[in-house]
Image (cartoon, rainbow, N blue to C red; front, side, top):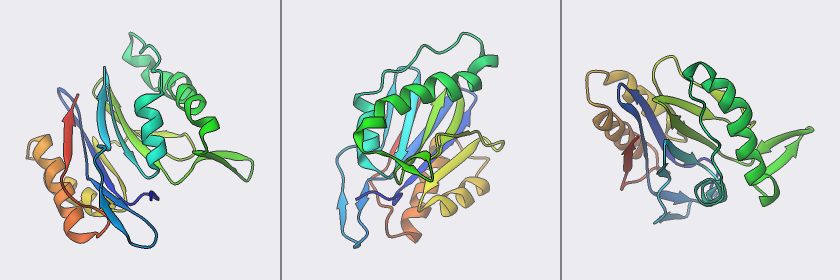
Length: 185
């Protein structure tokens, strides 16, 4: 199970970050199970949505010690690139979730959305961090469908936009399924 067969969406708002995710657990041989562990959760000032490897999600949720967020937003991206990613990397390094490919460490078949201080970031498998200039992002096999939905609904409330994006992805991708978890932090 795993391999980015899900849909996670995130939206920046004036009040924080909204992240939503589906409940599908699928495998390369097309088996399906509705999982009980939510792919989206809040941990203090942080909000997460994980796509792909379930072990990554479990480690981020239960083993990651989050570093102290800097007081200044001016230092936030540097903090995420350095301190946050070092904490993520050290938490998952010896778990089998990280492999070396061409002498570069990579998270196996996973990436995730993280929100902090009203900013949404995509953490890619190479530990890089991306913030969309559009104020929203999606990941997983339902990504393109969800991004199209998010693009077409800027007039709606963020939670509604997230739900519609996940519904669209579930309608058109067999590896995305309700129920959906949508949280705001």
